[in-house]
Image (cartoon, rainbow, N blue to C red; front, side, top):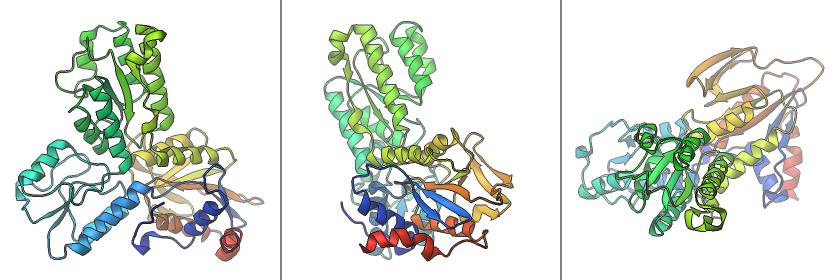
Length: 413
């Protein structure tokens, strides 16, 4: 596994010890049970897998190297490098300028770019149209391209299916940077449609099976299909790919639904002519994070703290999984923990920050048990800050070296 040159302040003196210990005892990540950091009156259940993934570390390394190699030049990012405010703010403080917001709002006109400017493509990738605009301005869109290799794998799979005349069904958020980029690449080779969830897939199923009039397709999926899409011919051969940060179980459910639909429409004996198996496009890090989250939920924690950017898709899905079992506080950093009786956290349903009082709910006679995890774009150092701030609310807690002793002993051995 390649090791990346990541700024030291993104590393952590606590979480890294736990992670390194698990790498030694479970190198193939077969065991999704959590690690336990026991401070006596408060215990933390740490996910087996979380934090920076390969694609994020690759993007960060390229971005910081671009700054080192181009001192004195203007350096731009197409949009946020990753969906984490700490990383993005650090790049801004170092002089990087964003051309657009993550929602597509233009901050700097394209015509202000010059041929000697440096433009970094974020980990989500970008569209063929934007690549062409950069080329027209004398800028190589591939020189500082940090597109995640697993996103590119989805593009390559879609291209291969397009050559075989399959229509591509993209499971994703149609206004998310990654899905926009995947849609752009896919539609060059194949008719393409984006579905957000199982409910939208049911609509597509019913259109294919004739339960909904075909002409309603264009209204129900307005803005989510490629130009020239013919509902009467382009839904006879399909393959499903995904935005890599979506719930793996949901992508599989959508793929299974499309497969059953094609069996009902064309018969089981003809399924290979009408449905392409694309399960190999699931991102390993997204899958591992979600499986590790499910492992966390097998215990009896009091609540969960999930750390990450509020516009991070993969982090939001971890929150969704946790919400099925226990209270969840989704925070971007330790500063959101106002006191031991008040916390500011993000409500993914209201899409706004809310404040909860008496959140810590210390109970005499027993330890408070807290799930602690993060999304793939959150530095481990931020989790350290959250953990240490909470521990400070328990004056009788054990020293850090005592809590870490079981993990340090593994690393030493």
